[in-house]
Image (cartoon, rainbow, N blue to C red; front, side):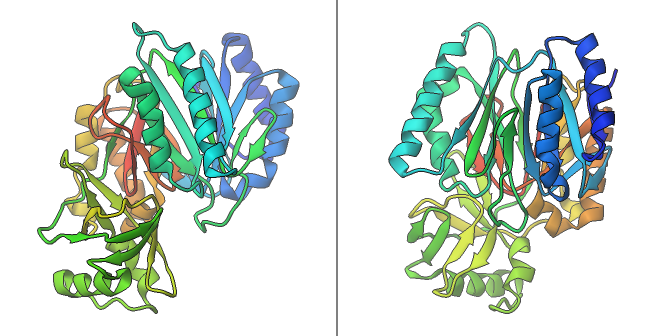
Length: 376
């Protein structure tokens, strides 16, 4: 029996029939639903359907979903969780910073109570992409949980970055939140972007959360366009910024040689650049030229790192990466991954930021431009 169903979300009768079959064969199971943004208004009907059946439901809305190497702007992926997560919680993060800190501390305490040192577990997180300071939230969780869990996840929401409810369970459908799931007996996820770092570096001398205000003490856009012209021979201005930004993201260099990609998605009037993901003040930055499809080795690297390759593979594919490569190349990359691990059960969503580490069991980091893969 398939563990994943791709269905029009409007066909509630068919969904109900599938879930009943799962119930009969796997009575302890629940459902993880990944909904394409074009079908987001039908989430309440899905909630009503599973509530009527008495089946636990968790889910999120993403710009698109993918299945068998094809992206879909409408519909839902229903993923059987058998058994259902040991722990799950929808956490509201729309209060003050103090309230957010308190909510994360409470979540960490609840998770600690569920952990068993002898059993590997993964903290799987789905955030609303508009939650500020996701990197700081991951750091706060790590300070509480350390390496007692693996960390993995992705950002949900609209590719337009407009506010919308995007996280749900049986009873809630919210924005500005976090859906946290504890997967027991799970070995985590692997993540890769394969972007290469050029030699020239700059410093983010002034930042505000996700916004780079100054680089080398000058307005961020001024230095951004200078470096792109100098390094790559491309003239970027206010008029064509949105055409080029996804092809020339920032890279944040960390002491462990890991590179965090940050894609600028908005140019402010004062010349500051708003990115997907936080940029620490005084961070060492470089301008990356996003590689072409032919140069990417991500699928081979992922295939080498993945374990349990035969299990159904939940995969999040960055929307910015696809915007750079194009839809055909992105679909080809998913098919290449399928071939590399000899597994035709690869499915997931187009995400707005990804969570994980390039080393299994490492520190949780917020990334752009990556693929994240995990068995489910």
